[in-house]
Image (cartoon, rainbow, N blue to C red; front, side):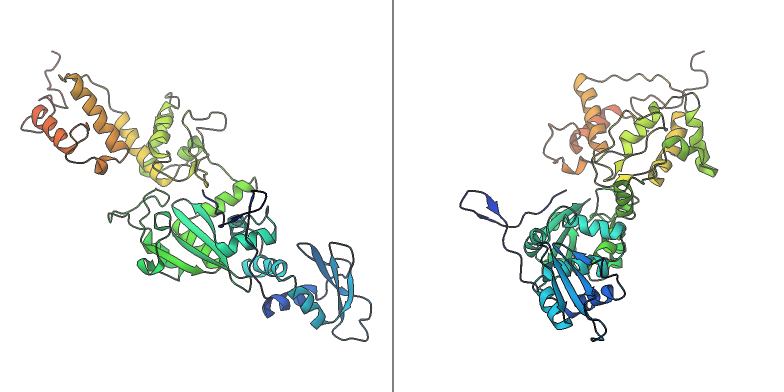
Amino acid sequence: MADSAPASADAEDGEAERPDPPDIDLPSDAFDAVLDALDGRDPDEPLRFEGFGVARDDGDREGDAAGTYRLDPADDDPRTGLSERELHEALDERAPAVTDWYAFERVVGEFGPRRAFLRWIEDADGATVATRYAALGEGIERAWGELKVTATITDRGERRYDVRHADDAGVPIDELDAYDDPLDARDLVKLDAKGRYRPLKTAPSLAGGWVFPDLGPRDAYEAVETVYPATVANWHREREGELDVTNWRETMERQSGIYGVVKTWDRGEGYEHVNWVAEACCDDSQCLKRREWEYDDETDLDVDGGDGVFPCREPCSVVVSAARKWTRLESEQPRTYEFELTPSEKEQVEDVIDAVADGRTDEIREADTKEGANRYRTRFLRAKLFDEDGTLGGVPTEPDEDDGE
C-alpha cells in the first residue's frame, strides 16, 4: 500500500516542505449547502469547519427576513451581523475548509464504507485541510490490491479519481482503454491477461491496460467495489470493530448437498488438513485478502493469514470447492509405490512441484536447463521414466487383484 508524497522543495533548514495548496474558489452549490445546513439550526450550535464555525445570528432577525450570520473563528473573535453577501465573502476566504466539508458531507454523503474509504485515501482523519489540498494538487496515490487510485482536486475543491491497474502507473491515458462508467469494470475483471476466467476476484491476476481517468467520489468507490466486491465494506467493518468472522468449522457445518462431504474431514482428524488448505489457497501469492478466519473460536491455524489491506471474514466458495475435492482425495487409503530416481531427479520432481504451485512455469526459459522445472528437462524425465501407457516407472496406480498374495 503506497501513499503519495507530492514533489517538494528543500527548505532552508534542510527539511522537505509541501507545496502551497492550490487556489480554491467557493462554488455556489457549496455555499448554498451551508445556508441549507444553517436553516433551522440552533444559533448556539455553529456549523463546524476546520478552524471556525458558522451560525445564524440572533442579533436582528426580525428586521431582516433573510437573517444575519455569525462567524466564529478559532481565535475567539467572532464576526457578527454578517449579511449573506458578507458571509459568502468570508467563506470564500476559507474556501478549502468549506469545500472539504461539502465534498464529504454533501457529495459523498452519510458516514459508512464509501465515506471512510474516500477519507482514508487522502488521510482526512489525520492531516489538515491545507496539507491534504497541497497533496491533492500534486495527486495522492493509494494502493488497493492490484489497483492504483490517484486522487486530485479541482479549483472548486471537487475530488477527481483515476483508477487503474498498478502496473499501468505512469502510462499515458491515451495508451490505455479509458472508461467512465464504473460498472464497465465487471467485464474487465472476468479474465486474466491470458484470457482465462478468474473465479476468485481477489486473486492477484487482474489484467491491466485500462483506466477510469476522471471519476467522481461515488463512481470511484463503485469502480473499486466492482473490481474487488465487498472489500471496502469488510475493511470498514474491521475498522469499526464490527467484522463478523465465520471460522472454518462453522462454515463447514452449514454445507449441504455435494459439499456436505467436507464435514466428514473434521471427524477425529484434528485440524492439520485445514492448515494445508489455508497454506494452499490463502497465501498472498494466491489471494489479496488477509485471512481472519481460523479453525474455530478456540483454535488458531498455524499458517500466516497474509498481509492484504482488506480482510477475509470466512472461507470463500473457492476454498470450499477445493476442500470438497481434497476431502475425497484424502479419503483414499495410502499405498507404497517404489520408483528409482537419481538424487538430481528427486530434486527435479521437487522443483517441478514448487514451480507449478507458485505459478512460475512461464518464467522458466526454454534454454535454462539448470532449472528443474525447465520444459525440455521435464520432457526428458518423462521420456525416461514413463512407459508407453504414460505410467510412472511402469508401476500401475491400482494394484493387481493378486498383489500381496
